[in-house]
Image 1 (cartoon, helix red, strand yellow):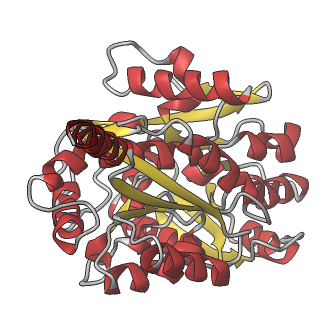
Image 2 (cartoon, rainbow, N blue to C red):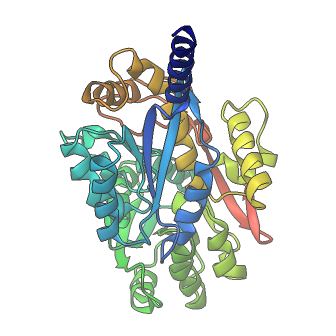
Image 3 (spheres, rainbow, N blue to C red):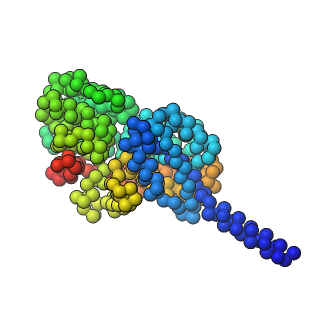
Length: 383
């Protein structure tokens, strides 16, 4: 009998140890690791391997899926993660259109969503649905402020705009136009193009006919190179500025020599060797880039940084949420949302984050730099 009690006790201890070793917090991840948006999704998927495995006393399990750049699959996978796995939070999906498509399901389930996308439309304007979403790249107004400062310093008085005809482009125009007007910079052209377009000659002709001092391109990676190269081919001589969506090696690879001199406002991880050690975000950015390069053999595009920063935000928020609820419960998910919204002065790879009830991105200017394309790579603009 004594032997049996010992065996039972040991079995109970083994079961307890097994349960404690199991992941206690479940984080869903949806990336576009294949399909047209793979240039964004691959570094995001890779970055999952670098995310923290523990937060306080809790272990974290990441359940990762590829939506193949298909917004319908994004929705299906979101529902699967919510109903079958009962995730505590979602990182993803890749791409602004896909993220906008799943937003309502995250809100209905009252589960936090950390969206590593470019468009501010996932969190602006704030409402009952978007209060469950946190954007893990700087909002357009932070980048726009840097672009306008650069334009004003260089004497730009008129500007033409060309951006995607989707939430990314629309959000950018709605943000940039009033900020430019306030700074005394007149918008003289407003053009759109599709992510699938192979030519924008008509839009370029209209831009050039408006005779702007500068043009702002609101595209992403290789897609942002299209209007730039065709502006150059058409003989445009003014400065061409870009949003942080162009802060990618694919932009330079596709644009080649024609994008030399492009001016981009983006995260300092693009030019880490030129950033002073005293800059608060440098150490975390160096750690991220170094660990990514060690594991995957290349430096990460900025798209991966959105996933990495999402992991950092969750690592900080999870222990606080655990004081109010158990992972897997609505109490925990609500407390996690509240903890994320309460983030203050948190240093990440892309900037210092302070969330508020109205600002669910929270990045400030401390991770933002003006770069140019010089000799086939990004270089810090120091003047």
